[in-house]
Length: 311
Length: 216
Figure (cartoon, rainbow over the protein chains, first blue to last red):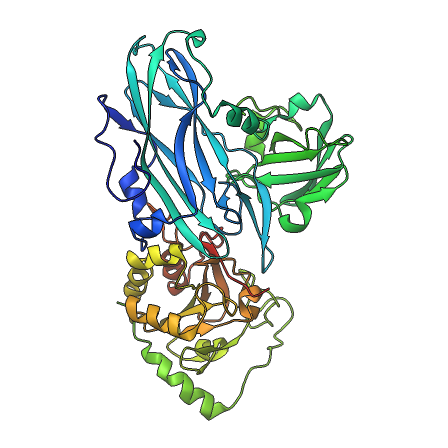
């Protein structure tokens, strides 16, 4: 059904006109060149395109996803701040009128390599959620094919590039959610949602941030009531966090993050906060931190703790 | 496609003539570029000196390279011939294109492999083979203990550093802004500024690539 590797293109498939979203797949192939299709096919990480439900509902956002299956000890990279690696990238081929919403990556975990190199990675089967808006111009009974390309760097000790071109999913269109049923992957979507960052406001006031400024920089303290451990994973565009290896994870109920220079371009501390609570169930919860620090960012933001509506 | 290090033959002679050299220079406090280098490389400060062996077992000393009259800048490139990101760049001549632009302008390009013994990309033979395949004629220096890599804070391959003719580190970070569709080659931009005696606009970026395969 879907071809997972190789330099050929799956673009021609499908009866509907395709509009690429994101970087075109053929350009992606040049990124991590020097590997043959055979080598790629022996790869310890593979990707498949899945849907939460059995049909697409017209006129609303539908939840699709890419599952990366991995052999033990291999990892791929969360697209946030890492010392090494390359971000995992997914791009879609969509019919006209369809719209890709922001990809939702679940919270990663920290991974330290010799030389004190800190990365944020995924191991084991990992679902990345890809929401797609389906317009009302498609109607009950239509059948739609959506394609995806994924690109990643997979490493154990050595690294090899991964790419999957022309992943496909073909689904019927219906008019109401009641006309859909759960797919086999539905459970994995539910589990993954526990690892997707929710607005800090949903912690009901138990998470607080405070900022201590000096010169061009600042120290931000994040505290979470009753937490026994905290970790912070900064986004790619966030203000830099200094000494992230030492400071980004701590036992207890607070993190103290010394920041790099705050500029207009990097004016917000943004990323994922993981909070391990007093009990074991659930083991942890993850929240989105978005703390404006530059003048421009503060004008937009509402203050120290900013609930983020687009988790 | 890479430049022959014509001026490099002079290093061996310089070493013989002057004997072992190098002590940290104690310049006037705080202000001169001749200040003693910090222990860890920092943009805007003197680049820490090092001595490493190239693939033929010859010593290469950064200070000696800088001391040569016709050296106007030194580029350090952290290298691993088996890293797919490095391979990708060599397959599209990213480094060669920059080197060609500055041909004859006194830019010395040193590649450093800080991978530990037994790790991906380690070994004289592997690095010689890559040099052959990719037309690299500049020195590739072996830093298996990782000491120089850690001194420079090298995290990835590639990880790039541009040092001016006075030995001050003027750029550290990625080679460009996007592996797939680069709009800026930061090394090229830094070299252009350095050779013109101008401030480097983007002096630091976050490098990308495979992790340096440190021994520990």
